Image (cartoon, rainbow, N blue to C red):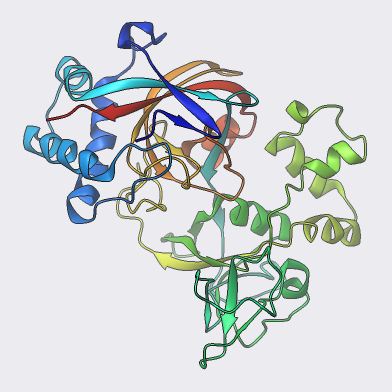
Length: 364
């Protein structure tokens, strides 16, 4: 771990300096860390620019597993205070910022119909991330994924507008169908969903790949068009209401401004209390899983988040267990609030200033 980084500096603080630390439910945080610990002992995470070191996290994960599951709040707090040191993340420019995400739960069908016409697609064959050794001469420098022809040659994947127009018909398998393009769009933005099927079963879909085109926040259009007067008003619920109120052609034009398109794979719903398995390889825990900039923060690191949300003060120890295209910067986080409409209500209005404190493993 570096003491300084071009985007931020880490400043040593004491646990006593963290507002709300003593009042947090450390047992809940410890349970989330143990979920990471299972993954840590199987595969050490790659150390990122701000750290902490992946190998050091593995050691603390093993200690957490040795303690077992029945750890009370006092012992859980003692675990974190004994084995970690807190460092405030202070960005060189700007301020910390937090948003919220959730797992949509919607009605769906496995076959298309007039009521369920919009497909959620599996990746087309040959779609993969562009590697550092790949020949990019014929590709837009902004692309991060591309289609391989089997001979090592890469071509751009169609973007959202082209895919909505049928560019991948017959090439990408529909996983399921939902009622509207807006519903599908929010599933894309969240990267996962629980789908309610007619027989009462739940099918989970999770991120499998993406088109590789740059992400554009469609909520910005509300600012450009004067629908809202500030970014703070461009919340997810406001965006959904605006999109649903547009005429079909206007709605399509707004949606395709975001050229990024997400592809999915099926997954079981093993524990309804938990979210999908995310980028760090563990199921997300409501209120305890945080999406971070994966180029800066090492997966599975504990991060204490302080923010004043519309729902009240948020002072929670969370685990870096996911990432996202819009999560960029050292003091940037996305809180997972859970699944369904209640979680959407909590997540939709979160666009708030925040402070982040990274917990770094002590030696030994």
